[in-house]
Image (cartoon, rainbow, N blue to C red; front, side, top):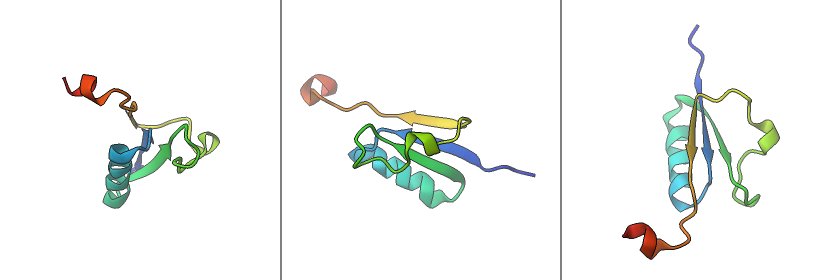
Length: 69
């Protein structure tokens, strides 16, 4: 029996929401999305399973000029 792998995307800003959607559209993973901003979060922290195979974490870009250089 081949169990489907799970992915958790933490931080659902502009770029990472696209990453979340790519995983969902692939149909290959159970995908969960969480953001500290409750208006962006897809899953509540309590509904995310304890065992996740892959985690993608995004940090907000607060100083884009510094980040680019």
